[in-house]
Length: 307
Image (tube, rainbow, N blue to C red; front, top):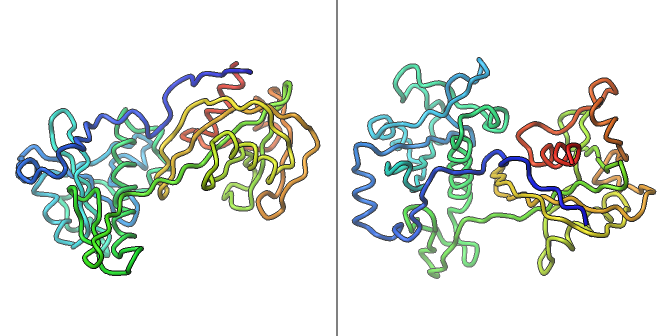
């Protein structure tokens, strides 16, 4: 079995936060954290993050002080405790109810932008914190009612859980596991082009969600067979990457292709091909593109090329 270690950490990993999960229900701790003059707030507006320098290609996260955060908190959205960053409390606050939150903030605070487009350029740790806030706020906005009885829910554990006001059921943030795999056979690897790709020339690794009662390895073999008709032998773990767009975690693997003839599922893929290492290195010259630099798909490809 070929073991290809991860060459470096994936984007959105390496959080600098101490999540303090054991203190989320401590009312005195949370009251002190909210009152702390050093507290920081991560605003989220309609799944976008507040950043400076995006247009210049030098993005950096903008975290608000208590004064700046009060204005956006008045927009009526949910908030939640994320953890401590160098002993400073950090909270996420959603301001999506405001048609335009920028006028609520001091001038020169940047703009709300899509995190995915610039995550790989952010200073270390910032992409992880922004992704954490984005994922948690998405869950809060989408889970205002109980999935058991339909009654409204109320926040608990400093915004990290919801409790039903009717039946009392507790609800916790959802993370959907998805496998993503580079299938290799000799000096070639399998890449596919999905109908869903906004980039019409991009070929990427295959991926799919894990089903109930299924191991990661079984999910890899099933997804590859369903999408491309390729039998898979050994499956080797590479790394994982949080992907809160909106609520997934990608578990990355390299896998052995036992067969060669491709039979695509036309509902899942528009095309799939075996690419040699040389073709991948010359992808621009050959007229196709690879996944974006912040994705685990690109890391799986690059690490295999370097192996």
